[in-house]
Length: 441
Image (cartoon, rainbow, N blue to C red; front, side, top):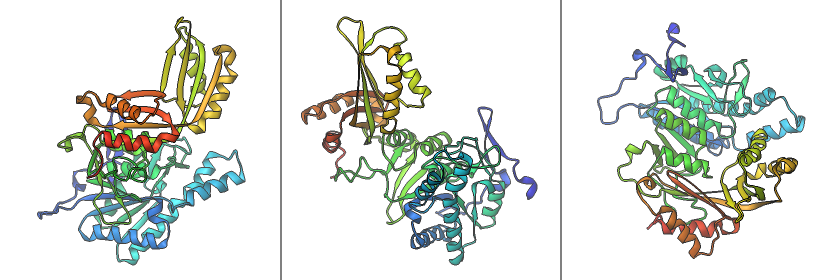
């Protein structure tokens, strides 16, 4: 069997992506009503926060194994562990070596994987822990936020075929220099989806502290309801616009490789939300959900010269400083000679953005710079927008009726986003949720 390892790769766009099994590795399915499936289960930090919760996770995994399914498990570090490791690294050196930083922060998932494998063994389940370098899960060399380049699943598939459950440390991989890399915060979701794609899994179950994807934040809107299904595109917009259920990169990867993802709670046995292709949803709502992000700050440059190249002159230095700009609106003055330019950045980037702009004031020639961190971005999302008019108008009308002023507007094919004062967050969410008929009965 060893000669079959590392030989089978999927190629897309001329680039090696993932190792996949040959035909002889394809799993046999039973003739009964519930054929055997291959499932990747991912458990987040709150799901494995202590020994008791790890034992509870082991029972969940065993239930799928006992049902006859092939199971691979991906785990995060125990809740709070990564933060502690990051704090220790910074206490040692503010300008630490990124390679050693990854070696430290990746250790949290190693502990969880070993403990869960032991818990499964104690239940009589054949299990073994795997670290990123043991698979190997290959990444680029960008330490702290590496991207996955390939996964060799040959040996793991052999172990799965023999009845073993691999328990994989998420968030980590192996760089081109054979050093441990990490994928950035939320990277365990990305690890799980990537492995599900590589293993040709039927589904990737993401267990977290919520029992699915809701139409909006149920902590703010009591009438928010859980969605049975949501499209990849909608989930990607929800994640990128502030919803914390899934990490954005994991949704992108699921959409690219067609991985069916299910969001479930580790603490209650309730149906979750399936993230699937649009074709799987028979009747699509016009608006599926409303997301919000408090991580926004607004910058306005007053009376900038209205001439060709001024936008490039403004946003070029920001890009060079790794400041990501989101919403942009421009107002031209009556004389046509100057313009006010407003845009948003993350709150973490606000001070850096202001400094860059002030350092370049002579070149840019603006009259004044105003910044405001007390804003929130609210986004109405739904693939049904493609075929229905009046979605934006309904949003603007609902906010106007509540006296909420809109500062900036941006749109995409399936999203309308507005920037409003942060004090109006709850009122805006509740008003829009009702306006689009999303309230639970």
